[in-house]
Length: 116
Length: 113
Image 1: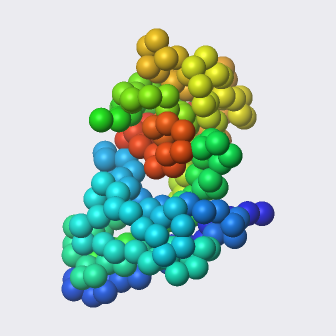
Image 2: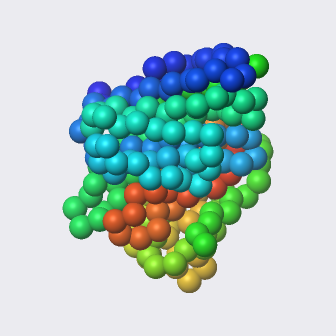
């Protein structure tokens, strides 16, 4: 069963800590994404990557960075966690379709991060 | 810019009722359109998709038709079950070769036995 695995379901961190959220996919997908999900706001794109060592900013990159050293792994880093980063974080991956076709995302189960 | 607008929830229905969740979009070019479902405590799962005008996506009794003239992609199901209780998200990908998706805010569906 193909899947996207996020390392933690629940995480509690202190303000100012450096936080790493890990995401691994086993489908050999080229594209990987980090979203945050907040009530009333839906999903907002933080960063994405179309290839190893490649990254692009999404709509809300401030306070975050990412790393993609291997094709299967895409890490989200909160450089100095703040309370307004308390949220559900969702990782997703997708293949690069032939002729640009879209096949849809496969999502991980999410990491609920609380910053206190 | 590109955007997706969904009807606000929650939507509460009795079992076997007909479901419609409205979704309209704004996009340049020819977007692909998707519906995702999120069950409690889980990530999102792809429910169905349509990649061009007049396409109908379907899965698990759910259907949605890509209507370019009304820029809509409404989700329908003829007879809902308690197990359909979840949050439903409409999303678009703005054109060929673009893999970033824009999501709506989600519509919570609650089905009562």
